[in-house]
Amino acid sequence: MSAPTLDPDSVRRTSADRIFEALQDAIVRGDIGAGERVGEADLAERFGTSRGPLREALRRLESRRLVERTPHVGIRIAALSHAALIELYFLREALEGMAARLAAVNMTGDEVAGLRALLATHEQDEALKSDTAYFQPEGDFDFHYRVIQGSHNSALTQLLVGELYHRVRMYRYQFSAYANRPQKAFAEHQHIVDAIEARDGDLSEMLMRRHISSARHNIEKHLKENS
Amino acid sequence: MSAPTLDPDSVRRTSADRIFEALQDAIVRGDIGAGERVGEADLAERFGTSRGPLREALRRLESRRLVERTPHVGIRIAALSHAALIELYFLREALEGMAARLAAVNMTGDEVAGLRALLATHEQDEALKSDTAYFQPEGDFDFHYRVIQGSHNSALTQLLVGELYHRVRMYRYQFSAYANRPQKAFAEHQHIVDAIEARDGDLSEMLMRRHISSARHNIEKHLKENS
DNA sequence: CGTGACTATTTTGTCGACAATGTGCCGAAG
DNA sequence: CTTCGGCACATTGTCGACAAAATAGTCACG
Image 1 (cartoon, chains in turn purple, yellow, blue, cyan):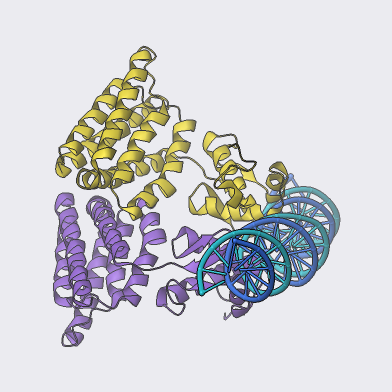
Image 2: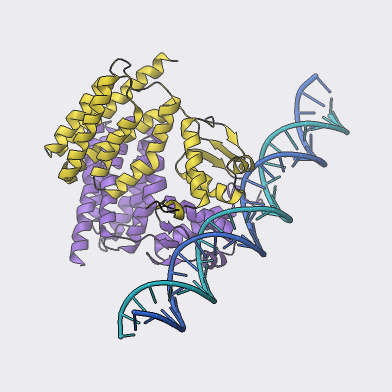
C-alpha cells in the first residue's frame, strides 16, 4: 500500500508553491536578514529554479507584506519595526476578539472538546518546563489557530491565518523579546475556553482581548528594556 | 509648463500594474461575470500583452480574493455569495470600529476639518437627490476611507483599503440591493464625526459599529426580499 | 445500453533570451 | 575641490517557445 508518491497534495504542488513556502520560511526564521536586498537571479539559483516561478512566489510574499518591492529597482525583505509590531497586536486584539465571540456561538461540541484536550497537553508540557518558564510558540499558535477556526467565519480565518500570522511569527522569531509568562498565558487560555464552553460571547471576546493586550504590554516592556 | 511625460507615477508603472488595475476594475464592475472561468491566453490578448505580466496581475488578484486559482486547472473569477458578503460586513464592523476609535485619538485637527467639509458637500448632493433616495457609493467610500486613514495605523489601513474594500465594492456593484437609506446614513456619518471631534473613542467605535451593522441589516433585508 | 480506459486537445507551468529601466562610476567644467 | 553631465553596468520587466498536466471526447468491452 506504500505508493511511490504518497503525498496527497504535493502532486498538485507547483514549483512556485515550493519556492514560496521555502522562501517564506527563510524570511520568517531570519535566514535572510530583515531589510536585506535580494536579487532575483541569486534567489532563483539558490532554490534551483528559474526566475519565472520565483517571481510568482515573490508576488505572493509581497501581498503578505513579507517583502517590499519597488519597480525596476528590486525587492528587499520587509523591515521590522517596533511600531509595526505593536500595530499588529492591536489588529489581533480586534480580530481575535471577534473570533472568540463567534467561536463561543459557532463552535461545535467536538471542537470545544478538542480545545480542552489541547490545553491538557499544554499543561503537561508546562508542568515539565515550568522552571525554564518558556512557552513554546507552536502551542500558543495552535490554541489561537483553533479558536480562529472555531469562529466558522472563513473571511476572518483567511485574513488572520493567511495574512497576519506569518508576520507575527516573523517577529516572534527575530525579536526574542517574548512571552516568558507561560503560567499566566496558560491560565488565560483556560479562562477563554471556559467562556467559550459556557457559550458566553461577550466574555469570550473580553478575555481574548485582554489576553492579547497583556501580551502586547509584555512586549512593550521588553522592547523598552532592551533599548 | 506642460511637460511631455507629466505623470509622476506612471513612468514607474509596469505593464503588470496596468493589467492588474484594468482587470480588477473589470471584475469589480462585473464586466467579467462572477464565477466565470477565464483563460490566460484570452486575457493576455484582450489586454494587449503577453502571459508573463498577466500572470503576475492574476497572482495579485488572487491574494485579494478576487479570483480563485487551482493549479493546472485554471482561474475563475471569485464567486459571490450572500454568506460571504455578510461575513465581510462583520469584519468591517470590527475593523472600522477599531479605526473610528483610533481616529478619535489620532486624527489631526486638519483631518477632522476635512472630514466635516466632505460631509458638507455630501449634504448638498443629498439635498439635490433626496427624492431619488440614492446615496452614491463614492461619497460613502470617501467618508469611510478618510476615517480609516485617520486611524494612523498603517497595518489597519493596508488591510482595509488593500484587501477588503475591493471585495466590498464588487458586491456593491453586482448586488444592487443596497443603501437606499441616504438620509439615515448621512445622519450617522454626522454623529460619527461629532464623536471623533469630541475625541470620544468609545462613542466613535460604538457609532461606527452601529452604522455598519445597520447597513448589514439593510442588506440582509434586501437579500431576503429578492429571493 | 452503460461503463471503463485510452488518446487527443487544450490549458497551465516552466524556461531562456531580449529589451528597458535604474544605479553607480568616471570625467570634465566651474 | 565640488558638482553636474554622460556613459557603462547590473538588474528587472517582457516576450515567445517548449514541457507537463488535466479535461473532454471517443472507442471498445461488458
